[in-house]
Image (cartoon, rainbow, N blue to C red; front, side, top):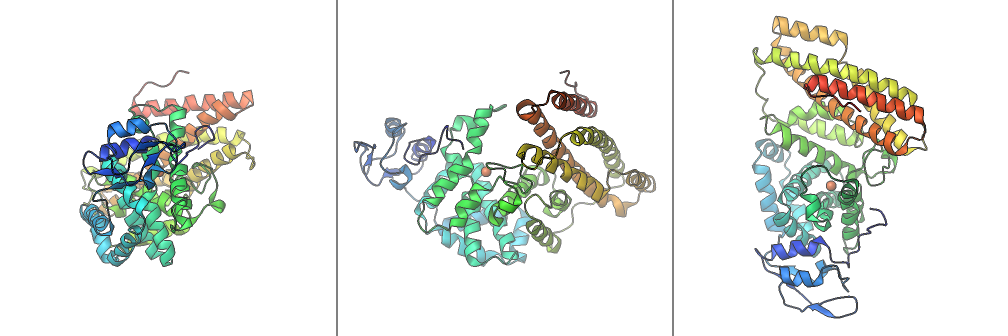
Length: 452
Ligand SMILES: [Fe+2]
């Protein structure tokens, strides 16, 4: 968050509106007189936090933060948090199987007990559960998976607690951002993106004021969108300056997003996420990657539905077509990246080179785009080598992840040319390359290419 709109816990923001909406389903009352900074009473003690009441206080500065002066009836506590968390895990057989196999239950119960000590966390998590249910669902799965990873990494009890609390609260900042921006359909403006990105700083500021909460929790929340290659936010710090807990949350957020948005819909096992993790093995510390891959490999999860002789040629043909397009993109990207100097003092340039290096490391390391791999796939198809079908599917997952990173590189090049590149020739080279990349996309997707 920049100085333009610094978060101020005393200033009434979107959180008041959320409380008023919660008040429609659970009573929310003022536990003391709510006063403006001059001491005038705006909402007397005992009054409900209704829509009318919040309209009176909007944009005022208060003497105390709103969350310290209200109480919600029947808010989440250790027992109810454990119940909703386990309900979420039980909905997905893969996660329940891992929960039981790795004996995670005592850890989760201990963490829920730890959560219960903090009134502000109980209140805000209750508001999140009612007002932003998708974010709440993500917080539950994230805190569960973080606990599993932290437990298997043999973190201390203090770090395990700090990690669980950070995973549970990592998007609390969203409660303080204008819901019109959060719910906006279509493209966000740069200013709207800036406000959304601010949720990490808002979350950190809320948490660092809570007495007794581990300091590592606030730091992990601040860093949960950073990446070790320096392409995250808010500070774009590289791995040498990032803490472990924030990176565990960052990785679990990616894993959960891929699993819930893609794999569950395709009826695929979470274990099949390993090839995607391999592409990203340095994104959030190698140690974190190693632990989750080991957990998945050791898991008793049943194998996914085998690929049939009928499906395999379709898969191989698709892989060949998309692989060829990726090779074209790589050639274009390599040419433009060779012209961009690698100036370590320039964060934007460093981030561009880091993403390009990641792509090339995967391409060279996995060999899935080489001529010999293409010949191998031809053989698999022709001779119906069913033992190689799963490997082909893994290669497809890796290719999809490479496509994601290539899009990321393209977006970063576009922003660099637009906002940071001072040299006209370099700028023209980047713009020319972006046009060529868009033509490759268009030929693959059969969509019209960008003409300018
Ligand atoms: Fe976030």
